[in-house]
Image 1 (cartoon, one colour):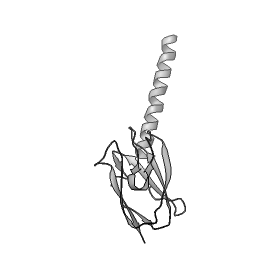
Image 2 (tube, helix red, strand yellow; image 1 turned 90 degrees about the vertical axis):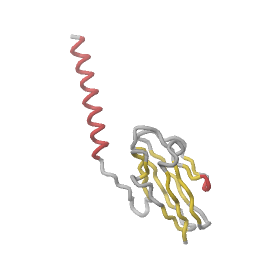
Image 3 (cartoon, rainbow, N blue to C red; image 1 turned 60 degrees about the horizontal axis):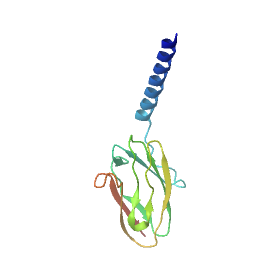
Image 4 (spheres, one colour; image 1 turned 90 degrees about the horizontal axis):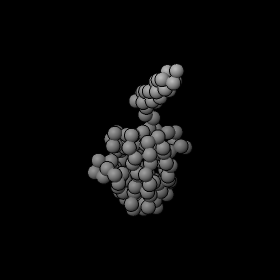
Length: 126
């Protein structure tokens, strides 16, 4: 009797874990939120949105960015010159921040765990 209960519990964990994994694989990657909501950056496969996109922000017009970790390891999102550091974001978590500047320029964003692989540019323009 106890062996049957243990087997049922083990099978339940396997089924639930499999469904969770399949759901993450087939979930659509909507990286464009509505204009009022800002931008979504997905951390997955050691990249931001597959291509580490260049992000354009207008001077004195803040852009809200939500960074969501869909990877199996932790990551962070850092822009040194704009004093943005999310700290570590675990799998399944997200973090929302605002990018704003009154100066035109180019700024590097990156993951400190995977520098050189997970990095891109923020362009502040008129």
